[in-house]
Image (cartoon, rainbow, N blue to C red; front, side, top):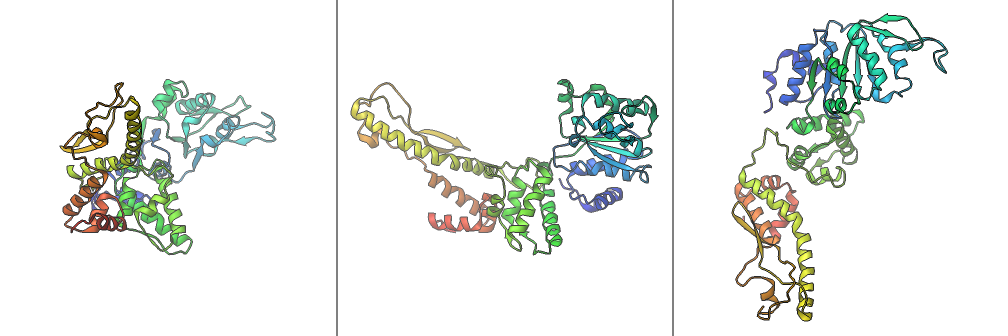
Length: 418
């Protein structure tokens, strides 16, 4: 379920406004609440979640609501620093400690003394650096590269990763003791596909921001576009959504975006999307689930019919030569007790056609059978959708996830009476 804005505590609303966080999905609100709760207590925090979910906002929330908020905050991308220099970046180095060290340098732990360090992509740290980091967490002590002097640093650490840390520990890529020290408190950020209507809210915000930044007419989204945005998996999460919306904002400036336009901006082959299981506004009933199954049948039917045609040609040739194919009766597939026949119309056998097959038509299907074709199934599916929506094409098109234009063409093609 989505939460009502009036139901949110004032601190959560303040955090959302201050850091530009959009959305009201329960998983997101729970993560923000957890960050605010842990902020006043100097514990290490591990933020987890898929790439592109916005993990970088949560260390800022923790810092902003903590007693250290007026001290320095340093964000470090551990995956972007070469292995040979990461120790120097974090802990500093002495002059002459390695080639190119022409002077002494403070590291982030010395610079951020009294404040907070955010270690993004912490799972990318080399094992030697992990050992140094563990010492800082346990004792507050570190040694610069090339030095023998122990220094102290009062720094709070918040780390983030998109890696399965338990697996990384099991594989020996991450120290188990460091993992437990970092994850004193864990905060999980839900992927975009689990955030329901937040997807639409974010798309509108990105469209508005893009139009304002570049002084261009803003795009808007019709119902079919919103439905497709909600149902797509978004493997790249918020980062991918922003990229797609900004592309549409550039090339479709000022236009109303429909599902077909959205499809054109998704990666090739990725628009065989899946429904969002946790989508809170879903009103799909069992009949519509059945129609979704018919939709999958539509995608397979063309290939199967082509294959059937080829097999019929081979069967005809075999009957003239005493060949090795014998047609069999149609195989029926039932969906909600509704038979969908003629999906498979052949089976290889070693014996030739029986003499009493009754000709090619009799040999191709069982006498008296009435196969349901793709057109029959599609016509029935469209008719049921129209009936469920009181003949309203716009609502039926949204349910079927096709454009109104496509639905109108299908209605005319099949002669469906409204």
